[in-house]
Image (cartoon, rainbow, N blue to C red; front, side, top):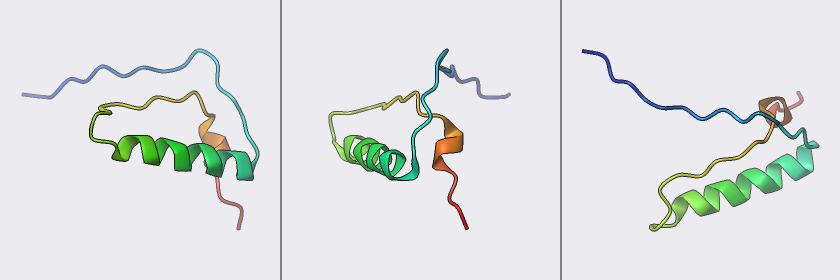
Length: 53
């Protein structure tokens, strides 16, 4: 038997620069660490999270 999960995808994504994307990810991680928070969603463009070599 396979597990099924509902996934939410944003209709509009926001592209940020590397510094702004890092700030957003720190905020998301801080929110996820809170005991009362179960889920955190963002419409940040995944391409904004790419690390330049």
